[in-house]
Image: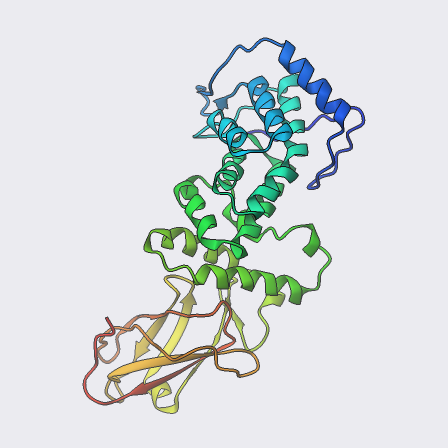
Length: 337
């Protein structure tokens, strides 16, 4: 695990955690001249025995400054080309490292604008920069990339998917809403969380399902105030809709222990007092009892009396308040697949 980094600040450049400051031209010019006059010793990143990645901070600083002076596809690609592809950069406390971090901090607003314009190479650069950042700079990357979820969800997932197994902190990436939400009321924060979940749920490409579901899983555990009645807080701390069964179903089924897995998956127990329904459907409602979309088929197994299995609710909405189940008995149990 990379050690925590302490950023040094050049004279005239104020440092504020989690916020960007404008680059002053004398500092930019001074850094550029200093670096252009210094020798280049390393041309590529190399993996050290400790598992961290040794990088050429001098070369990185030059590439970041070139991007700052001319933010373009060419300078974005050039910067990406020298970033570590695996692991995290090894911090060495050198002046070159400090210069690279400071140059990156003042260049992030330029990158944020390119990401908000949905430029794929810039989005990829945002993800790649986690390999050389920590602390406040990583938080800034979380915020700018997280905003993309509701702008272009597919692009966000396409760039996240190949990096999913090495994501530094997925909960921060999808859940850090930014400075503008710090003093907002819970209802505003919750609304943005559910906007992101809704956007993710709308993506149906099979190749993006793993990344989509992983992001939704992290967003499903919001602050407790995001679980307004009649929603219930599960044993794992996540919000779940209140489940209501029709009178006849309530005589034969008990539904319990729900988890946000493959949609919402719960345990279903059948007591055998009446025949199994041929099929079971559910309808989602909001907290004002407004129906949220059409009825959906419940996925559940052919249970014998006294058996328990898994029932899967493919919910269509980010945060239904209630789910109401009903059934039809027009023959034997029908395979929902």
